[in-house]
Amino acid sequence: MDLLEMNRGSHGRKGWFVDSTGVHVLEGKLSQPRPLSDQVVSGPVQGPSPYGQGDLRVGIVKKPASYGPVGLPAGMVKEPAPYEPVSLPAGMVKEPAPCGLGPWGGDGGQPWDDKVFTGIKKIFLTKGEAIYSIQMEYDCNGQSIWSVKHGCGNEGTPHLIQFEYPHEFLTCISGYYGSVAGDECRKVIKSLTFYTNRRRYGPYGEETGTYFTSTKNEGKIIGFHGRASSFLYAIGVHIQPSLSDRVCREPKGCPPQYQFNFYQ
Image (cartoon, rainbow, N blue to C red):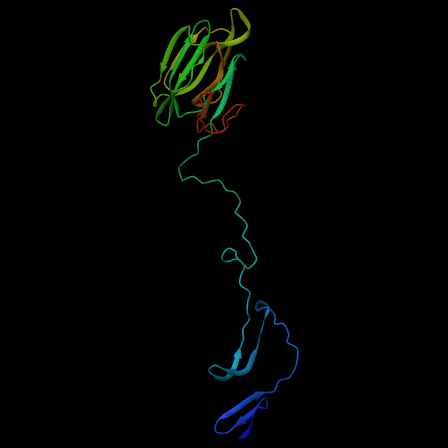
């Protein structure tokens, strides 16, 4: 067999067949390869290609883009959009929030609050030397709900006020508050008058003492609050302002939203 030398880098023995082969190795240190994401190779490299002898042009290997919204450079995170009010369809106007007015009267009795509803259908009250009690039938999205009786209803003359709901709605109340015989220190509701978009109801009771009214805000009355025990000591309203009345002061006790908690 003859010795075989190939390309100055291989050696072996051959006859009819290549009986053995070997390589010449230059001893050196093996360097740690850089991560693939950091390797940048540019320019042509001479050497055989899978399809024959020629130039192999090696491109730049990029790191995978970090997670983020499409269309942003790697590493950048899109800031959340600032808060923007929900836009309403064209032609629609958002109604002002209801606000509380009053209560007017004395500070006796216990506080009560019917909160707000869709509308008011009936008012039942008893009167004598003052207003003894008051009770309302509310509409809650088509369902009739009676409030508890505020005050003492065991005596006095009863009156039922029935509105032509939903075409007739309450817009204003007025009345007087003052003292009663035997209790000069405490003020109670002496008289009440109710106004709707169609007519006036009352007055119910004696129009003596200090006058009050809710006419400083135009709109639809959708609830009542006040103070009561043996008498109706004070009364106030929750009103849905008209769209033309954009400014609505909210005294203490005004509900921030629609609630149905009338058994307080």
